[in-house]
Amino acid sequence: MKKWTTLIAVATLSLGLAACNETAAPAGNGEVTEKSKLTLQEVFDKSIATSEELKSVRAVMDLNQTMNLPSEEAALEISSKMDMEYIVEPMQMHQKGTSTVNGLAEDMPAQTSTSESYMTADDFYVYEESAGEWMKFPQEMMAGIMNAAEQANTTDQLKQIEGYLDDFKFEQDNKNYILKLEASGEKFTELVKTQIDEVMQSMGAGEEIQMDFDIHSVNYLIHIDKETFQTNKLDVVIDMDMEVDGEKMNVVQDVKSTFSDFNKVEEIVIPQEVIDNAVEL
Image 1 (cartoon, one colour):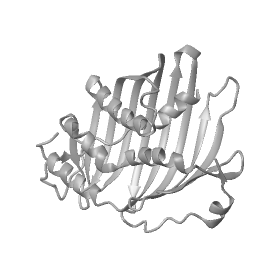
Image 2 (cartoon, helix red, strand yellow; image 1 turned 45 degrees about the vertical axis):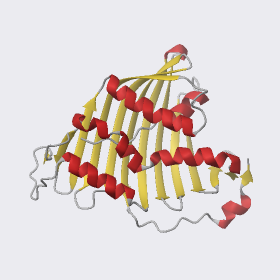
Image 3 (cartoon, helix red, strand yellow; image 1 turned 90 degrees about the horizontal axis):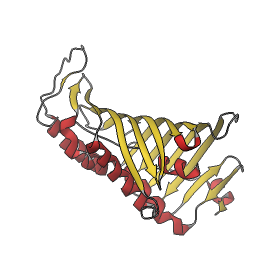
Image 4 (cartoon, helix red, strand yellow; image 1 turned 135 degrees about the vertical axis):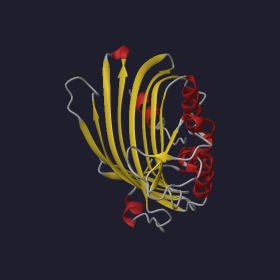
């Protein structure tokens, strides 16, 4: 079970964008008082340029996922709420959240825990609630952790989906460009596999674990601010089958993310009491 949980944790998927040479249609039945004439390709290019200039951001994530293991006739349900501040250069991150896990064992009640972590280019501290203490990861593990964290780079994620723009609907309201996708099929299986392979390789696990995927459906909802071209909302729902080292499971994952405070997070300071009291692993 721990192997599955680890794999799903690194498999959370990222951005997509929408139908290249068309301008954005009004969203729903609402009226757009200031209709933009930019095409999707133009919005995409501006989003890439904006993401490359990003210095810092705040992100709030709401994750719900269900994992069904036919071989064990069991279903594992995980829900998490995370609040994160992130500075690009030099890399700094502070994250707090809660997670609830249900289905670890028969007749076991749902387990809820809180988490908090700090990361810089040199150090990674995690609060271990069960032990009531902070832990510091060893320096030799930092390269893998940093490489995995860099997979969240918005610029790289946008470039990965450039070949899928024609599959997205492109709309707008008065504040945002709205990008939607409802899709399935082998083409999107390959996109998922490429993204997860990169994460696994960055963690040094790519050659140790054999993974295969079959995407039943994938739904994206993305909001891009019409003035700043910052991505301020990303909702992703994925229903997929995974096979890892010959063991099969179905995963339904629903991730809702909002982004704010673009370039306003100036510094993340690791409290001295965390540094002084952390137990080195």
